[in-house]
Each structure stands twice: as C-alpha cells, then as structure tokens.
Image (tube, rainbow, N blue to C red; front, side, top):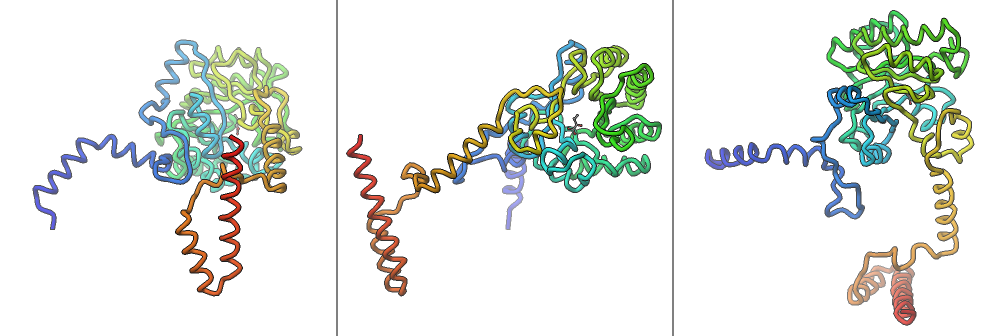
Length: 361
Ligand code: KIV
C-alpha cells in the first residue's frame, strides 16, 4: 500500500513537473524515440497563435498567413513553416475526397480531418469549417455543430459561410457560446446552387455593396475575421477599409489583411486530372509537387519490378550467422524444408552482395 509520504512525494513531483508532463502527453504521438519509424520533432505548444496575436499583427499591418490542411502531414508542414492560421476547410470535399463541390462532405468526415490536423499543428490557430447542412436550420443547430468542432475536432475556432440574416444570428449565437467565428463572403462555395456555379461576386454595384455590408454585419455579430473569396481587388480593399477586423483574401487581390490558399492548389498537386479541373484561376502554384510525386512513384515501381529495391542499404535488420544456422535447423526439424532452403539461400546471397560491396570500395 502507498504510504502517506510516498503519495505526497508523488504529488510534489507532479506539481513540480506538471508542465512538462502535460506537454509530453500532448505530443506523445509525435515522439519517435524507440520506434522503428522516425517522425517530426514535437512542436512547442506554448507558442500557439491566438486571436490576441492576430489582432496585434493586424494592428501593425503585418499580413496574416492562412493555408488549409486536412491531415497530419499537411498540418505538420504548416506548423513548421510558421503559418498563422490553419483552416480545415470543407474544400477537403473536393481536393481530398474527389467530389466536384464542397456540399457532400459530412460533419463526421470533417471531424476526422480536424482531429488529424490538431495532432500535427501545435502552433497555428486552428479553424474548422462548418460543413453544408449542419448549421443553416437554426442558431441552436449552428451552436451545437460549432461545439462539436471544438470538442471533438480539437479546433480553436470555426468558419461559416454567407451573410443572410439567419446566418448573422447564427454567428452571433456561436460567439455568445464562447466560440470564435470567422466569416466568409463573396463566392461562398456552399451556395453554388443559388449563385449558379463557382462565380466571382461583387462585380456590379449591388453585389459589391452587398459584399461590404455582409462583412460589416459579420463583424457586428462578433466575428474575429472575414474571408473574402473571388471578389475584385477594389471591393476587397473597400471591405478591408470598412472593417476593424482582418480580412483574409482568396482571389480577392492584394488589399486584404491576409491571404489564404488551398494546400493542394498552392503546392501544385495537380497531376491528377481531377485536381487540374478544380484548380482555381487565382491560385499561384509555388511548387509542382504533383510532378515530383509522379516521378517518385514511377521510379519506385521500376525499382521493385527490376529488383533493385530494396537493396542491402534498405534491408537494415540483421541476424547473426549462428542464429541463422539454428533457425534453418529448426525449420528443417519442423518439416519446413523449402522455407529452410529459402532462409539459407537468402543469407548466402546477402553475404555475396556484402563481399562484392567491399570489393567495389
Ligand atoms: O474550404 C476552404 O478551403 C475555404 C477556403 C477557400 C477559404 O473555405
């Protein structure tokens, strides 16, 4: 039985080390020690981006960076690059799930993406999109969905699209529930049914004024930022000027407080014909990762086919000669003669390759 003094010793130890214990637990899935596979270095969760940081950046006129991520690797890349905001966008529906629009993705699917991203990105502010069909019916439904995105998805904030009066009421209710909300105006892809497709907005007076007014209403509802998608640059500039909160542009030109792009679009993962189809015009490709992926896969296929992979350099797990002899003997004794010969032949081939390598050096 634990004595009083051993318990109080343990309590003192936990108190003294509580920060490092908690940090270790949180980052445990990232720690590669004693495992076969390597992994990224655990990030430092004490440097998280918060709304306060974003407000400070905005005040100093420093552009805010935002990129989408949908899984652990993309999240780690964003984190390592020092991106401010990581958006788990419902664009996952198109670039990850292969649908033609953002409408089909479900809340449960989004939550799987959110959790994976939360495990990988420790520093950026994490924003999760409310998917189509999970927040339009009532403010109560919107709050319930937003709560799940934070509780089950591990996000810091949510994003919702549009600015109809019911949407403003929903944004206000979510903020009142204690959840930070990012708005999204201009082209709102969840509304392609009424917009008549993926069409730029704000290209005539009424539509341009509507962009500004909707963004102002979202600000009034308590949103901490608004995405401006596919609007002419002067309309984005007017909106940015009219607001006290930062605007994040995507296809909105340079006069926004920050910019966002979809991960797959900016990396040029477009070799798949479907991706090529959905790459928007405003996107700059900063890499051609798709070409690199294709090349690597073709090379791998070729090397497996011609037997040059895995070479001895990629067959790291050794077994000693005595162990091999005993293993072969054991297999023979068990009536597995073919398996015994296979093991003995393999051991001999490895020895031959080894001596050839030594000769070559
Ligand atoms: O879902 C998404 O990726 C988005 C960005 C385009 C802003 O909403």
